[in-house]
Image 1: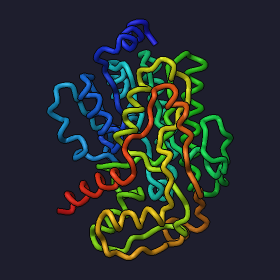
Image 2: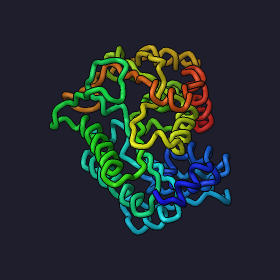
Image 3: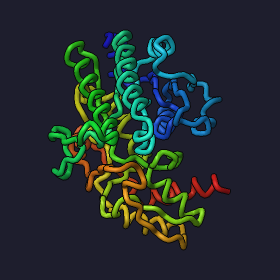
Image 4: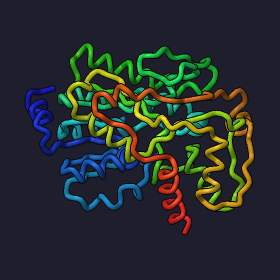
Length: 336
């Protein structure tokens, strides 16, 4: 990083952030937070999964600038990076259904997109945070998952694992840039981030189930429902991202970001029935029918968040009931 940018970060003055995937679920919320704290935000998104409605209320903000383009466009990303102090790289193929249906897009978008972002960051001396995922832990059984744990992925003939593998390559590449070139890189491993603006279109479980409940449709739980997850509200997640974006001791490290509040998907479905006051039935759908024959899933996914907690004093503040109510209210408003 150049001395100029290093000084700006240390003084914590107004900074310019480039948010790739800025019209997406997490990117739009982070942009709001950064703008509220006086920073300038350059957002780029090709709108393949992001939505203009997520950022419509930001378009008139004097410190917000949106570019509709793919991050694969070297020229566009180069221009944006040249104006930036910090790059938050969220742009990626997301959602289990999208990953199963479009494995080539998943691998190329995740790996090539991250490479383009890293090269731009290196060219202009930007600090860069790369979004990764709890999927990289694969079928590991050591609970809770810690950042330095071994990982266990399934075979390469199962598309399910292409996303995890591609994000592992992103992590390896980012940390290699940090080691070889001294680029300030931070890896963020998200565990089931949820909240308003998340769409159930690509398989995200909470908006999908809440949408079914509010529409009076059958609530469909994939698998046997005993698999468990920890859901963290996006408002908590972006606090961690913002803190890590400027903390000098975060450089070159991997951080789990998520909640430790574990719940089975069957129990989640029942909780959603109650919070939506729905009379919908809950039905189990085998994985082979929901996704593809031979689909494999993790039984539990629980993070150890002591590393980010020790560095930032961060922990989730919004419990699952409050998050479900936030998502319910947003989807209810959309349904009308």
